[in-house]
Every structure is written in structure tokens, then in C-alpha cells.
Length: 423
Image 1 (cartoon, rainbow, N blue to C red):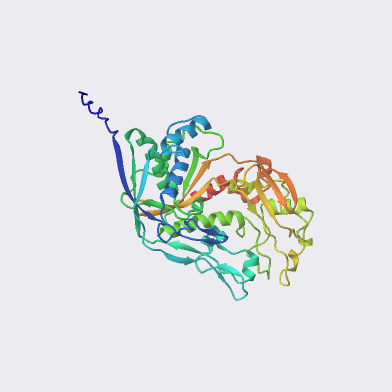
Image 2: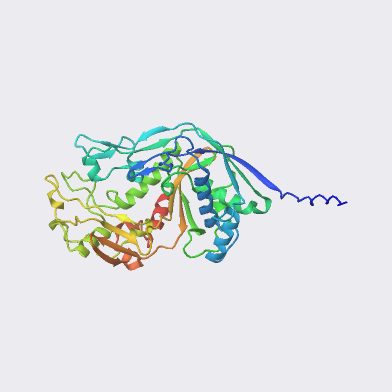
């Protein structure tokens, strides 16, 4: 007679944290769905907040925080897989969407004017600057294609739950804090679209103070990081999150293209928004391609650099082809593409993150400059490729007017942005 085997030893279930959080969007959402077709940035009408999107954001911000203090790419990759999963390993962090936000309103950003040219809608100039991919191509505009829209979820909220072992608390909470403070959902979150915040908890520690907890964690080459990241907020507060957001986009546009900042004053009787650029890239493109309108043959600044590469690449350049009302522009480079691109990469994401942030009952424009390695660059003009440089030294920077403000010379254009924001 065979004896009955003893029951298997009881396995003690590891202690699990179940963290439920409620969120809301602070700004308009740029797309967010899995369907993208040219300038059409769709939302998902059934599951606008998806687990895969949230997990992707948390993985990025976990790497940026590096709470496990990894020192090599290999160590970081292994640790990331242990926590967030790989193709062959299940994530130890379970994420569930408990509730979705209410259906959004569509926000029109661009419209055709009476000359059938796309322009920003009323009160949308700053947002249009950040949402330029919503515009159809010039060929599609000729055929009458309509610009796409943003999505406004208003004050509606959505809820998520995060379940994970206690031993991972530090790693998970670091990723959640960074995502909630600097991240969002949908496209173009680095320009503030789809910015989120907790709706069930008011922040008690300033973002700058919390950021210092991660600023000394190891920096790994090639990984955008909070290691010695730079952070700034506007001195004065705004009345709404949208106004705070617009303020940041307005400043970036002014630095890059604004009249009497990034560009000269508009010529008399001209329909252009401003005069010639005070940055060196346009004149350097004219020099490289050997093409220039007669009125533009004399450079505004003689610096053979592309310093705005630090804001992100690729950068597509457009020159006015000239018209009956603007004949002086005829002759400038018109080949396609005219593009600054990173060497060895398809793109270099901007290290500069602009978004609104709340402090108590006030709203401020905030900017975070991640510690990021800017790659070498090359300029493409039609079939020709030119190796170029974006790096500046104090001597070169002194020759570029936007970088010289109030007696101070900025070698890094992102430093210029942060300095101006603080004012």
C-alpha cells in the first residue's frame, strides 16, 4: 500500500505593493493612438490611455533617474529587463488601466486664410509652433488637405494601478515621480503636449528639490539622464496651465525665430513675420550650397556652425522661394531636402523639455534640460552631404547676437533658454 505524499511546502507569497493613482492632463494631447498617417495624428477612441504607452514612459524615466545606480549600458539593460520585462521575461511591475478619461474635444490649431495659406488659429500661435507636424505637406495643401487636430480632455481624469514587489519600491517610485513631473502621454511630450499630473495628491516637495535626489546618480554615455540635469521655472506664475505652457513655447520660438531676438526686424512693407535670421545656419547653408539671393549674399553672422542642433535633430530648413510681393528672396537655396541630421542616428531627441508645472495653486512654465550626448551632425542638401559642427567656444558665441544678452554670453543655446525663462 503506497503512502500518500505529503502536501507541497507552502511558498510564501512575496509582499506586493498595489499603488492606485489618478491623473489628469494639463495640456492638449498630440495624437496618442496607434494609427498615424502622415499629418493625421489619431487618438484611440476606446483606450486613449494604454498600458504599453505608460510602460514605455516609465522605462524611459527609470533609465533617466537610474535609481539602481548602474554604471554601464550592459548593467542598465539587465536591470531594466529584470524590473520592466523583456521579450522573454515578464515584467515584475503590473500596470492596469482602471478608468479612461472622458471623450475629448477636438482643438483646431491651423486653418486656411483667404489666400489659401495655412496659418495658426486665433490664440494658437505658440501651440501651432510646437504642433507643426499637424500640417499637411505643401503638395497636400495644394490639393486642399485639412490640417489635423489636438485633443482636449479638460478636467476629466483616468486611473492606473501599479503592482510590484516591495523590494522594487525605490525603482518604481522614481520612475513614477519623473513621469508625473516631466512626462506625459501621446506625441511631442518634450514640447509639453499631453503633460500629466496627479489628480489625487497635491505635490508637497518642489520639483527642483526632488530632482536633486537623482542628480548625482551615474551618467551612462548615450542615455538621456537626470545626472546634473538643469531645471528652471519662470519667475512669475500664470493664471492657467495653458498660459504657462504657451509662455514656454513662445520663448523657444522667440529665441529661434522671433523678431529682434532670433531674427532681425521685419523689412518695411514686407509680409514676412521678421527679417533675416541672427543665427548662423541660414548663411552657412548659403555658403555650402553656393546659392544666395542677391540681397542675402552678405552674411548676417560669419560663424561656420549649426548651434541649434542642441535643440534636437533632424532640423528641416525652408527658404522663401521669392514671389511678386517678396522678390528679394529669389535665389536662396531651394533644393530638397535641406536638413541637418545626426550622424549614425535617425534622430536626436531634444534634451529640452518644456511644460507647465503646478506649485500649490499657482501654475508656472517649467523647463528641464536632460543630460544628453549631442551627436555629430551632417547637413544634407539634395544629394550632397556636408559634415558640419554645432559646437561653439566663447569667441564664436560672441559673434551670434541671440547668445549675448544683458552682458552675458551663452555658449549653449539651451542655457540661453533657461536663463531667459528665469527672467
